[in-house]
Image (cartoon, rainbow, N blue to C red):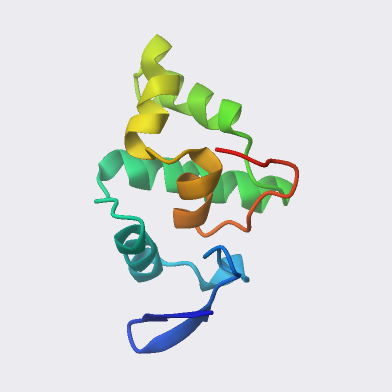
Length: 112
């Protein structure tokens, strides 16, 4: 399946995840977010930057617990970081955060 973004076609898998994380950019994130009915804010972008940096450094998608630690420490969410992650991505980390950040669907996880 393809998603039209700024006049170009971006290939998605059957679940709507990017086939190639290199296709991700701001316009792609907005298009993916619109398809999930998510209005992106500054904290979404911080999470995306963290996730994409983690992917660049490690070659793997960050586990939700690493994103929660990032939200707690770097974004000042403290003990509310876990619930805040689900405020940002109400259908779950894998279902929305990974998808909107342009990550492939993590194979080992079956739910958000």
